[in-house]
Length: 293
Ligand code: NAP
Image (spheres, rainbow, N blue to C red):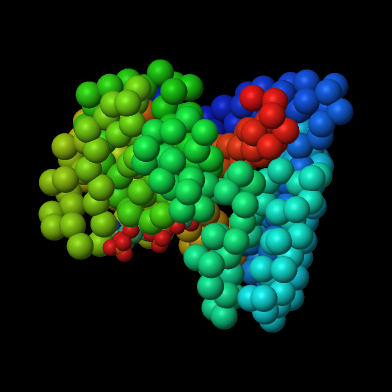
C-alpha cells in the first residue's frame, strides 16, 4: 500500500512552528503583517484569499485583505503597491493571480519590494533561487512540495525527478529546488512539447505534476515504487456533490496510487502546504526587514 502524504497534517505542524516564531517576534514588539490584494470576484481566488487571511489571523499575524473591483486600473494598483511597500506594518505583499486581462502581471510583480515579495515571483528572488542564495523568497507551492518530501523522509539525493510543467509559479522553481545542492536530484522538466511523456515520466523516482489537466497522468506514466506529488487543482463536474463539482489533481489517483511508494491526494496534499509556506515566507520577510534574522 502506498503512503498517502498528508498535506493537511504536515501544514498544521509547519503552522505550529510559524505560530511560535510569530509569538517570539511579538514578544519583541514586532507583529508580522501580510497584505493580500484581490482584483475582481473570481470565486476560486476569493476562496484562496479568505483562506490566507484566516490562517494569518489564526497564527497571530496582522492581515490586510484588500478587495478591489475588476476594473481597477494598472496605475491605481501600482499606487496601492507603492503604499504597501512603504507601510512598516506590512512585511509580505501578494497580488492574487490571475489578474484581470488589462493588468500587466509581470509589471505588478516587479513593483513589489523584493523583500516583501512573499510569492517569490520578483526577478531578484527568481535569480536568488537560481543562485542558491539562502536569502531568496521562494514560491510557496514548490517550497511546500519540497517540505512534503522532507517530512516523509523521501530521499532526493541522486534521485531522478521529473517535473511536468514549466510555469514560473510551480514547474521552474520546483525544478530549481530539486536541483539545488543539498537536495541533489537529477531533474528533467517536461511540458506540452515533450515527446513521449510516458517514457520520460516512467524513468522517474519522483514525479511532480503541475499541468492543470484533470487526471492527466495515469498508471502508464508512473513506474512501480515512484513518489508522486500532485500539484494540480482542477474542478470537474460532479452532480453528486452539493456544489455540483469536485476537485481533482493532475494525476489519476485511483489508477496511480497502487503503484506508488508515496503519493499526495487532492485535496489535502500540496494545497494546504502552499498556505503554510506563505505564512513561513511572511515571517522570514519580517525577520529580514526588521533585522531579526
Ligand atoms: P500553467 O501555468 O498553466 O502551466 C501548466 C504547465 O503544464 C505548462 O508548462 C504546460 O506546458 C504543461 N502542460 C500542459 N499540457 C501538457 C501536456 N499535455 N503534456 C505535458 N505538459 C503539459 O499552470 P500552473 O500555474 O503551473 O499550475 C498547474 C496546476 O497546479 C494547476 O492545476 C493549478 O491549479 C495547480 N496549482 C496548485 C497550487 C496549489 O497550491 N496546490 C498552486 C499553484 C497551481 P507549456 O509550457 O508547453 O504550455
